[in-house]
Amino acid sequence: MTSPPGKKESALPPSEDAPEKPTKRNLHAEADESSLNRPVDPSADFETVSANPEYFYDERRGRYWHRTGRSEWVDKSETQLRRWLKQQGIRDFADRKAGEVVSPLEVELIDAETDRRVFYAGPLAGYREGVHEMDAARILVTRSPRLLDPRPGEWPTLAAWFKALLCAPDDEVDQRPYFHGWMRQTLESLYAGWWSRGLFLALAGEAGSGKSLMTEIVRIGTGGRVAKPYRYMIGQDNFNEEMFESVLQLIDDENADTSIRARRQFAAQIKQIVANSEARCRGMHQKAMTLKPVWRLLAAVNLEPDNLMVLPPVDDDIADKMMLLRVYSGFEYPRREAEKRALFERMVSELPSYVHWLLHEWEIPEYLSGRFGITHFHHPDVLEVLDETSPFERLGRLIDAAILVRAPEWRGTAADLERVLKAEDNGLLRADRDWIPQPVWLGRHLHRLSAKYGEHRYSLSVKNRLGKQWTILRERSVAE
Image 1: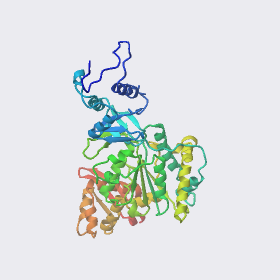
Image 2: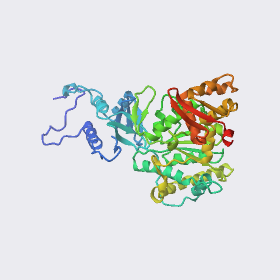
Image 3: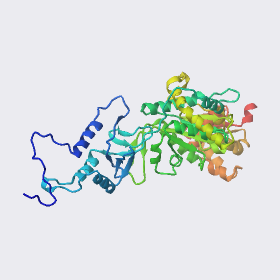
Image 4: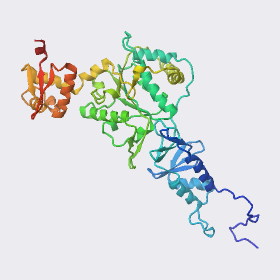
């Protein structure tokens, strides 16, 4: 009997004893069962499992992620994925006579959209490639950080460089333990695969001292990626998805907004990054979701007041979340480009030994322990310049110029002080009068002035129904 055109008969009759040949779909199901249903270690921050070697459905973007033959993850539209599945030999039409409602290719798409659905897909700061469970949501990390392979050895060039940059010429201040502690805590988190807090580190120094080179060394040591989050942190950008790919969040003084509004917004974001484990990921035209990235915030600025004003005022709310290091100009850099390149390559070649020393040889001193892993440190030179540019110091100068120049003593509430400083006949410039903040901020600035200069100059004398009454004395009247 001749078979109809287009239909082939099996060369062998079916046998009940013959083992069923696994289908492509069954193989996927077995891979899913083995890779996604592992027992979770309750002591771990997150569970990492091997990703399915084929593809996942990204719910936020409505796209599919496929691993190529080069073990790289690429995202595809449904049309692109259909072409790829057809290339793999998966039939794209349903066999109605066999009772199929949808084609095997469509079954693959349905499986991806249900069994292999993820709520986030892409690189995630501090996480290795694979599928992770995060707060009952499955995410697919598509690229691991490029961490160095630690190995024992010497690192003389880096050692000499750290000493020149972080030690005062007179040896009175040695900031190296604070930098090493900050790096040690970061690397422990990345190599062990768990989340940890980390202080905001600011490097301030003269131009050409090596600040930019230090940020490059940190970038290589923490996985090779860097993000520039400044515009988002001061409210000039509504989307922050780029931040979630990189451990290193780098701030510099380029196009910085030094207004007090921007600096306070920056301070609020610093507190969120340092103190909170979770962050809201917002991408354009995409559903926002909460993730748990491993972030380290690093700023490199010049020591001049105009450049340092990119940093927030150091008040009680943020002081313990900031590490302020001064970078000295004590290292002699070569002038020729070839020699500069050779120096950089030598430093990079020593990095694996430096990382090994931090992780396996160096013991963190007890005095470095703090609330956020490493205790904060503020170099007095950097803190002095920041204080000079701070709002409370500006307020003190305006009080001296507008009030205490005429009388040795003034008494009143913060609201009274606002009215006096905004009066047109007080001798202040229009820009200074416009700057005067609201009474609640004036009160906070007076507390800062009292903490720095003493209650003999700024004292909270009386609290009554009119509000908090302040007494402010002229400096020379104290001497009298």
